[in-house]
Image 1: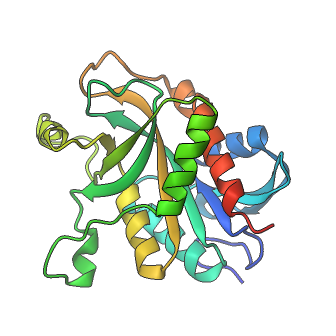
Image 2 (image 1 turned 135 degrees about the vertical axis):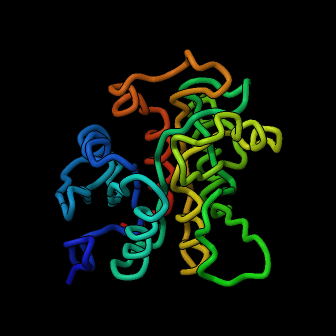
Length: 241
């Protein structure tokens, strides 16, 4: 039986899910990296698929939409109601550092945020969620094996895309934050709360240092092959079937 946001059934999803933001990117991933896949959900156009990698491992791919509220809903439901144990977010980001280049792969060890996501827990401090160590190490090894350039570090999950202060990013950059996206913090926190595994892999599609460095809309959708290659190889290590 499904949930209000996912119309699949328990067993429709593999224990490992790759999660891009864009539903069309989810379809592109399964078209190019999976075989014998089937669509298992389509509520609100958030497409989800389950199939097999070319090495015969069963994994799923499902879109999360944009922002922490959206990935927060989908990751919570996948973890809680569909037997999913591992979610690997595969997304895009803007770079805050001059030595991080367009199309580099970022392995997000931990996440910062400008959101009040953890206000719900009434903590007497600031919680810093992180990725699962086994997933981090696996992704690192797979990137090195394929000779794919990567960086590891902290990422900012922002609630605001068009920031009222155009220079706010510089304060995060001074603390070594690699760049900005909009989902990882909520995913990592849900995984921690529910005792599950999570990792965020990102491809750099624009730069705050050099505004002329920017991927096109088509490149954002389909120019992410190296990151997906690392994500699929990592997912295969944790797939149960």
